[in-house]
Structures are given as C-alpha cells and as structure tokens.
Image 1 (spheres, rainbow, N blue to C red):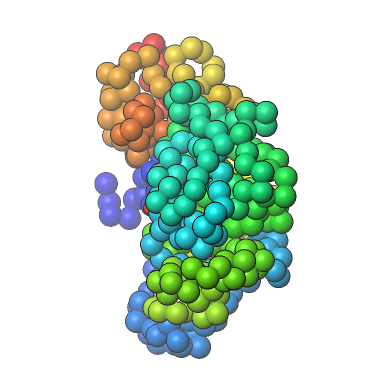
Image 2: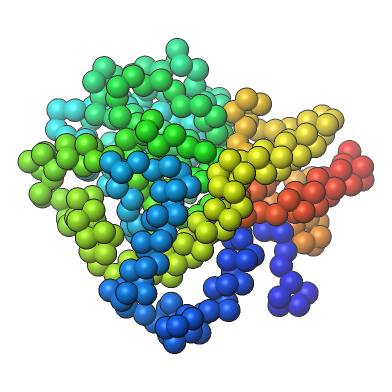
Length: 368
Ligand SMILES: *Cc1c(COP(=O)(O)O)cnc(C)c1O
C-alpha cells in the first residue's frame, strides 16, 4: 500500500477527519498563506491565531445555533478533565447532582464527580449491559438538584439519546463527545455541554465547552470557587477567551477547518441526513438475518458508533483480521465489551459504509 492510500478508518477516536480538511492543512502546513509561518510555529497571541479561534467560535455558534448567553470555550485535559471540572464548578456544598449512567463514559464521569460532592445515581443501565437509555418513569431525580449529568452518546456501547429526558427546571450537563455536530442540537435545553474534539470535531488536544452564563455566575458566587486551581475555573477561561495559557493552537485550527467544511456541506441538518443514511445501511445489514446481533436496543442505537456481535468470538476475531486486510480498519470492539464496533462519524465517507456492508454480506456468505 502506498503511503498516500487511505483505508476506511472506523476508529472510535481519534478518528477520521474530512479529507479536504487534511489536504488544506497539508498544503498550508509549512507556511500559512500571507503569514509565511506554519500554524505550528505561530504565537497564540498573534493576529493570525486570533482570527482562527474567532472564526472557529463563530462557525460553531452558527452551526449549532449557540445563543449569546452561552460561552464557548476551547480547553485542554480532554472530556475526562470535564468529569472533574464540571462538578468542581457547578456543585456546591449541600447540593446534590444527579447522574444518569448509560455506559462506560458516564460511569467514569460518576466516579470523578463522587470525589467532589454529593451524587445521586438517577438511573443506571449497567444491569442491562448498557444496551439502552432510560424511560422517563425510571429516572429517580432529586428535586432541586444542582444539575443532571448524562452522556448523550456512549461511544463504547453504541447507545444514543435520540431525545433528552425531561428534568424539569434542573440544569442539564451533557457529555456530547462522540456525536457533537452530527445532528442539529437545541442548545437552550442544555446548561452545559462538553465534547472532546477527537471524535467528531477535530484532532485530539482540545475540548469544546459550551456553558450558559447563569451557571458560571452561580459557580462564581460559591465561596469555594476562588479556591479552585486557576486552570479549573471556567470563569478564568471565559475572561481570557480560552487564552489564559497557550491553547492547543493546531487542534483549534483544524476545528476551524472542520466547522467550515460542515457549513459548506449545508450545516447540521444536511449532516444529519447523511448520518441517518449511513447508520441505516449498517443496521439494515445487521438485522438482515440472525447472523449479526446488534448490541443496543433498536430505538437507542447510536448513529455514530455501531456495536454488534457475531455468533462467536472466533468469528469476530476472523472478521477483524479479514476486514483489516480488505482496507477496513478499526472494527474491533472496545476491550471492555468485545465484539465489533464501526464508528462512522461525520467525516466517515459513505463509500466506506457501502464497503463495510458488502464485506459483512460476503463474510456471512462464507461463514454463516
Ligand atoms: C472519548 C470520550 C471521552 C474521553 O475523552 P478524552 O478526551 O480522552 O478525555 C469522554 N466521553 C465520551 C462520550 C467519549 O467518547
């Protein structure tokens, strides 16, 4: 295989990026047009980078319809840092936060939040091997909770909330890492959103945080707020426009290019149509006979991370090996759940989905 031949990359994250984005970054890597320096070499205080981060934010605001009373931040430490940072800022002494657990990432968020304050597990699907989201009546919500946290797409189990639960007036704090910008999003329903860039928005190294201003104000009114390390105070990042210290310049530059690519494509409505079509193709093949078994309950299936099993582990191993040889990379399921997983994010090409479906059919014909 030549060095410039691209395989179909089904990895869960870091994941496939739009080819035009990679090509533009490659073309301009040595010298940004009109600047004469690489994006990897410029100051984060330069006019050039200021324009990059401002355009990135403006594009994201346009794509997701982010209202003025929400701050947009570009932070480091991954979505994992937000597992701690969100409760450290938003959960005061004497308050309780509710956590809805539908997979491994929610479980990790819960573990960190418990170190910070009082947490109520409002629901967990662990007994069902994380194969579904809760029904409204299953939620054991705390009246006047500080916030409700959930993971709107569980990357490892392939579970997606297709509608948000009703939590009344309690603020919703949501980890949208693995499906951010894959579909239209009604920001007003959220008090805070966070998403590691490396699934659907860009490369590793940057986490997008969208925070409603009243949440910030409430955090800042808490006497304990000032004791937080400066890098863990949302307010400092708001004040410094994500430039309190050196931000991940290159990651933000790529996010700008990805957001442009999405706008050119027609925005999130257009992106969603493509994503539905892609996911439907794979799930139709999974359901075609009894050979494959989808992991998630049908109505909770993720459009981004398609998880499924074959009749036995030996066949799954064979599938991974042979699909890789056929140019379909990264189909092995996460080590904690096994089986197979096809991550088909925004940038994953539809031809790759067609190639996967054809491969699945042929694999079943030979081994079924
Ligand atoms: C990948 C992922 C994370 C962890 O992201 P990091 O940036 O590696 O910290 C958290 N939540 C979800 C839903 C993820 O998919």
